[in-house]
Length: 231
Image (cartoon, rainbow, N blue to C red; front, side, top):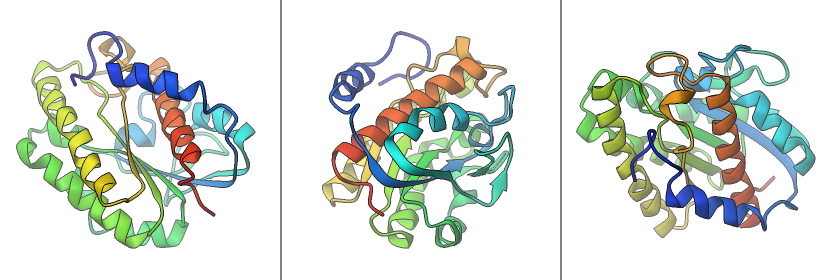
């Protein structure tokens, strides 16, 4: 499915239908690790918190304890913690994420990564393989963790956008391989974020980050409805 320019994708519409039956979910504890690059860091948002503050607002009624965790800090309390690393590519996270998971002990990981691979055209055709290697590290280091793997938000640069569209078509296929092995890995569709929601060539504005928060909220709600999110 193509991400970024047109109307919401079919999977986004399906997610809305599913969400209508998931509004009553609760879990005792949500410890959320946002994992990625400068978009996860919050670059382009007016507060520096990216999607995290809006997501926290959506989650607080569903859990007695909601925490965002990670070794990085940006934005406003109480959502300053995360693992968003400015300028990093997929391979930069691989080999380091296991240690971050051990230190923070999340039960949910929100993964949005690959924008810099696409922007720099860094072995873009092999990026889905690198994404799978990173997911391998996560599910081995934190057995039972729920991993929500999102498509990339769009770019205003035509060449980057073309590569993003190719990458995004591959992401659901990567996720499906882990579901076939009964890992708690789910796909999150970011197609509601369009080029009009960007602050610059790559980073969302506040409206774009609100759409990201909504997409990740639907992913968490769906995982909770499946009974995936454990203490």
